[in-house]
Amino acid sequence: MRSQGFSVRMRGSARAIPRVGAVGFGECRSRIPDVASSDQKIEEHRMTVDFEPLMRHALSLAANGPSVGVNPQVGAVLVGDDGSVVAEGWHRGVGTPHAEVDALSKLPLNPVTGSPDARGLTAVVSLEPCNHTGHTGPCSVALVDSGVSRVVYAVDDPGEHSGGGSERLRAAGVAVVAGVLADEASEAMRVWLTATRERRPFVSVKWASSLDGRAAAADGSSKWITGAAARQRVHEQREQSDAIIVGTGTVIADDPSLTARGDAGEFMPHQPIPVVVGEREISAAARIFAHPQPPILTGSRDLPAILRVLFERGIRHVFVEGGPTLASAFIAAGLVDEYLVYLAPALLGGGRVAVGDIGVTTIGDAVRLTIDRVESLGEDLLVIARPVSSHTVSADPVHADSVHREK
Ligand code: AOF
Ligand code: ZN
View 1 (cartoon, rainbow, N blue to C red):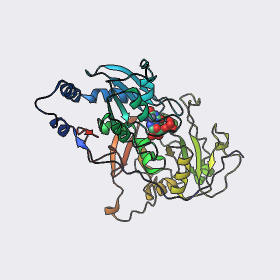
View 2 (tube, rainbow, N blue to C red; view 1 turned 120 degrees about the horizontal axis):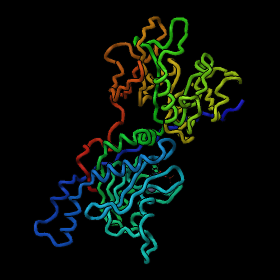
View 3 (cartoon, rainbow, N blue to C red; view 1 turned 90 degrees about the vertical axis):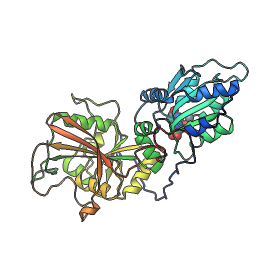
């Protein structure tokens, strides 16, 4: 039987504290004296460059990078005083240069320092430049060495080791503006930011039910509640995850293959790792053992501990796909970041509900959600929702999108 060894180690979770204490853009401008020297005038001109379109461009560059895995999607543009783009870059996945360094690599080298020559330029980056040596060196140092005069970024890096680049840049005399398009960037990086802050994977829970909320008919049959278009959408969502989690009950009852497949049944390029939660024995003949990724059998029902171990293994996004007991356990534990609810125009009645006991006994305790989007898939609907209180906006929720911070 092929499976990855698994042990759940209990550890306290470390939570990064968002840095605050910023000065608004307006305050910054008001410090420029009325009678300005030419240097000050140049500085004032720089301050009036509208960074939002440039940040939007950085975010579109970021989207070129892989959307699964340990690292975030990050984009960077290097711009002149007039806002013209001189170079651009993005991150292409673990072990490859970060977006800032990728952009800097397009510049000629300074003959004296041997570093890319970015003197007088502004770097617009979707994530705070990192301050650590991981697979690559600190981007804060690469930017200082390049002679860049300003760094504008969208969201703070909540990483335990990687955060703090803005302080290092400022200490080296580089002007730093934080929070530009923070909400848009936080949304685009929601999975990675949530996982990094919480030190557990981002959790998407999916179920398919009849309009009256039943996941199966009275006899237990559930194939197929939804139609082909909805089922294909599920495969796309599987492919966008690092792991698929199911309970032992689902493996025993349904024997799912848990692969991500295209219309014609072909494997999609990325296959999420199957993870089985629960203590019951699984047959060696189960289909998950034929999965291209060796499954992880947790032998445990301790969800926070399981998520912690998955995080340590580099898993940042899990797709919880079965069945009602497991979905209910994730909801009851307050561990769901995203709900993917497929609704078929059918009524099944009976007691086989999609979600069981989630610890709600009275209406005041209802788990309240916000609906992000509704998709129409053939005859079915996909409702995408999130908990009302989840970390959804900027790393620094005190500051609205339009309030940029000079740090
Ligand atoms: C990226 N790409 O463009 C930026 C990142 O292990 P490393 O050295 O690749 O470092 C990864 C961390 O660096 C990542 O978790 C994030 O905190 C920071 N910034 N990472 O993969 C990038 N700018
Ligand atoms: Zn970096």
